[in-house]
Image 1 (spheres, rainbow, N blue to C red):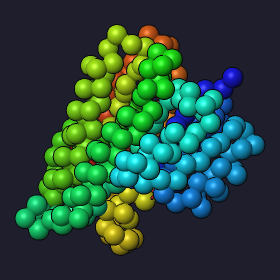
Image 2 (spheres, rainbow, N blue to C red):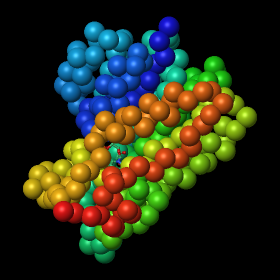
Image 3 (spheres, rainbow, N blue to C red):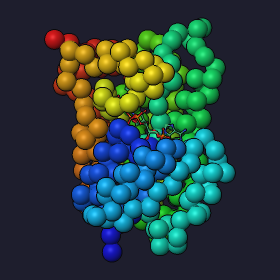
Image 4 (cartoon, helix red, strand yellow):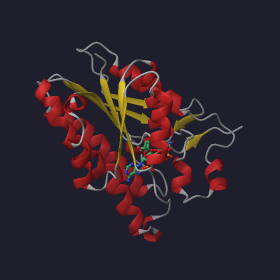
Length: 250
Ligand code: NDP
Ligand code: 8X3
């Protein structure tokens, strides 16, 4: 029987590319996101390859997260891989000019949402003493860059959660890993700049950024290592990027 992968944020970017790659590799999928239309479209594209279940919920809503996971048929709860990917930056400003609504969104989605989803799925992994949790962090969880303050804080929290969960699960067969990408061209910057497509495009101008497929490939690598091997923490940058604040542009 195929293994089941549960992917949050599958409606776009890294999550969508991961869904496509895992389908190509025979994983049955639980695809999550708020935009049901996109989930349904992706489901219809992938069902010729694997079984696909969709769950539309907001990761900020703790009750909705638990309800969504509880609603899965029993055999769909045997999740082998959880990709904690849903997340975004909201705004980019010095803290003294920052929006509290943006701060709430980033902490609630990137940190608390990831915790809620993990809390809902972990008991099913513990029951079988098997599973792999892959958290999508960021270079922003390794460094702090100008005007990135709260987004960086949220991704530093993901880094700490990744380490902490691995400590807590030590002695079990459940693996915990993180992929921390640098610049990946997705809808990320459009969301960060609240729909300003021109400003978003400029982030990737003059360099070859990572593609969502590159990160999907990293995730596939991590989850296909032998059971005794855990790739705990991967930092993946475009070749043109040396650190968060150093990008070579032609
Ligand atoms: P996208 O904006 O393309 O995708 C974000 C995904 O997160 C969407 O599927 C969106 O689905 C989902 N999401 C956002 N908010 C919520 C919410 N409240 N509830 C449920 N789902 C939500 O960006 P990326 O693919 O780039 O981002 C994916 C992850 O990668 C994020 O954690 C991001 O921080 C991280 N990352 C991105 C980098 C980049 O440069 N792009 C670099 C490093 C890390 P929907 O709107 O349908 O709910
Ligand atoms: C996204 C990468 O550098 O835009 O996490 O914050 S960055």
